[in-house]
Length: 146
Image 1 (cartoon, rainbow, N blue to C red):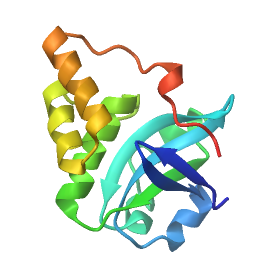
Image 2 (image 1 turned 30 degrees about the vertical axis):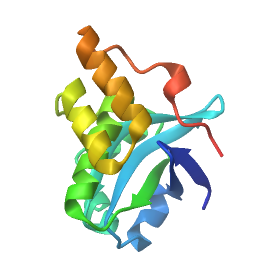
Image 3 (image 1 turned 45 degrees about the horizontal axis):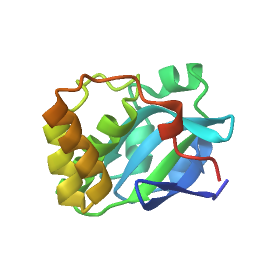
Image 4 (image 1 turned 60 degrees about the horizontal axis):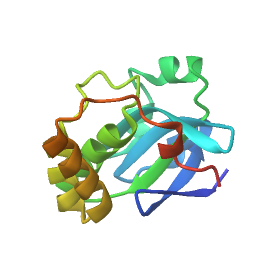
């Protein structure tokens, strides 16, 4: 697969699920599949080692049942940076298989500021100030397939 996909200004690598066993680096990841020229996101997470995480992931079978075929992976070595970027991804895409609550707008703002993402930070702050509730992610918001 070895395609690159831009998400929030970062270049993620698409890795077939069968290839995750070779990926030993710390990263944030999205379980996804392509549909209509976009990646449909089922789960967002972070890990110190993708190979170990995917060997017994609690949502792996559910993601496959929803059509997931690959992971979108971004290597991030620092744990706090991974956690903040994961928070931003969960707010941005609201993946249906994530069991945690969707991050609040101000949590997303804090994560975006930490990660140096001005545009998502501005959207999160505006959503907070307007009192917006969490809508489903817009289809326009999905990362485009490479």
